[in-house]
Image 1 (tube, rainbow over the protein chains, first blue to last red):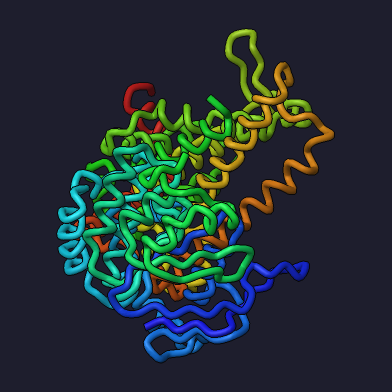
Image 2 (cartoon, one colour):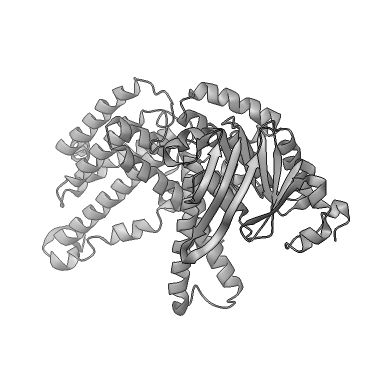
Length: 239
Length: 266
């Protein structure tokens, strides 16, 4: 489904955020992308969605991630940005939710119907007509996920989905992620979240993929995690 | 509350007013825009000494405020920063134009004083009408109207995004000034020597935020054209417009207060 070969992202000043990455994500995978701050997780997501320039190749369902293919690729990839404030730019939750589908030609009535279903599924129907600036951080994160689900994406990218959430909201978001059928890539250094939501894990450090493997194989390897700026998940006896 | 945060919340509260339900809110946005333009043009066209005729013009915005359910005091409260500036226009007229126009008892009123008051009234009426327009029309409606009259989509999108971005920008300013003041106790505002780095940081943060917002928009199919609210407005609302425009023009042509006065005083 996603085939990445020799992906390099270089920012001004010659800083390489990603350095010759190879990675394959299959349909139905739930891949955890783990790494310390600045490892290159967000850069990988930005490259996947064509938001940042890169060298190398990314293929999504056989289509190269290049300018002319972006409209159709972006219809199939949902990206839940780390800061929900950056994602929710319309005044009300419902307006934000129907923004994408209406842009892609769905009628407003159908989009609102679909929004009602998704809000119900995520158990946040009460947020429908609320103003984005008046809802809490946890609610905003759930609403941001809802806006992405509206696009019926084949792949969803979650960038630190539980950062700055309290335990209750964190659990709500984890349940929501687990309830989504699409292929998922979840970038986080919250390894307990990764353990709860992913079957496969890719460890990234300083722009390079260190190891890709099964969840248990990587998340139980204390030495591997600590040598890459991470710690064992709390649920596995981490500090 | 931080001043920037206060300003941001003021903007949002005006948006809340625009979501009220009243006959004025129900008028078609284009008709309201047209009426506001005609009203301001009529007010501006009054002779600078025609203070009596101008008094009657206040009836139009007052009527609008009454029907919309928005207290006039809200307008003055929201515009408390701009109003004094408007009222200062013409402040020098009494010194330049000292010829006496009439006297009230021993108080002699010069042409300069009359023209000053006239200018103040013109400014105040225009602000009142503009505020009424904004407070009864969500920005989406305004943008939709502008698109209807074939305003280029790039300009309309720019207007909409700028409007949306002002609140976010003010929130960003508020966050920065709050974190500054927490580490600069006793300072009143931001020290002059920090202005450069403060503004520089603000620009960088704003650009980054705008970039992330835009990224989020294009990922959801944004191609430069916003969809706007699909509210259906009664065609009857267009009936009010010729009536109100006619009222403005009649008040411009005929000196209504003088006519009313002549009924009682010979």
